[in-house]
Image 1 (tube, rainbow, N blue to C red):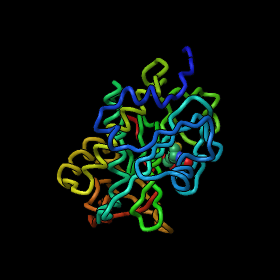
Image 2: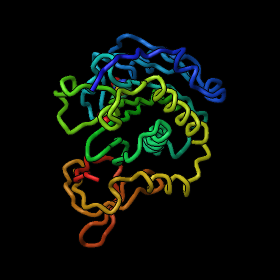
Image 3: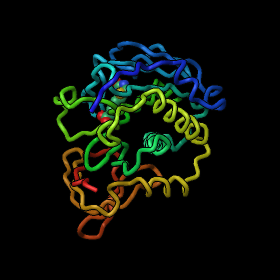
Image 4: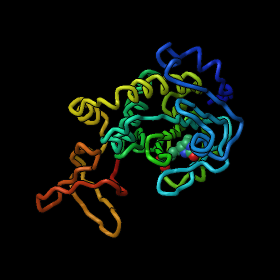
Length: 263
Ligand code: BTN
């Protein structure tokens, strides 16, 4: 497999964006290296700013984990977005972001991926990308961080402690990151603009189409509790719905879920 590095470029990304997306965004910043694009957007960004980096020295994952961020291979993207007023269904935003990423991958001719609640992107039982939302103060300002494995070589990802894959592995060729970034921004901005008036029925339907856990026997660790049951979609707050073996239903807002995801 050949590996050529096409640098991230704000002007190249801009060429792929439609006018509505350009108008909705403020600045598009591409750095050779930052500690974390989320940290940059939290500390220095304003509403509508997008931060991208070729490399992160302290990429942040969910639950305080590190996000491996080798140079020139992947997408590390953060968008600062502001809501006034703050929608009461804000907890759904991370799931909605996952839907935007999944749709953007389809736009880039990638098929067969899905979402593992709450917002991991998976393909063939391997992690392809992750999403980390961080709020500023009142939650009116949210930083949406997206990490996507694009052209990462096996050596660079050797330290990752779970099965992973990349767009290059899926498609068999090196993938233009600028085009993928533009596709993500277009899908994401559209979903963010619609978010205050979210159509709940449509959201549930969109989620069902991407939900890799639906109908699977899962093991869930939530705090000190460990439960087993059947995953059965999400409720109106984005909580994972589990049907336990005694038939009762449990809704979980935060949990580690394990399941075999081979498709
Ligand atoms: C996860 O643990 O699955 C979420 C990973 C999120 C990583 C992205 S990379 C861009 C942004 N900047 C960060 O420091 N983290 C997010």
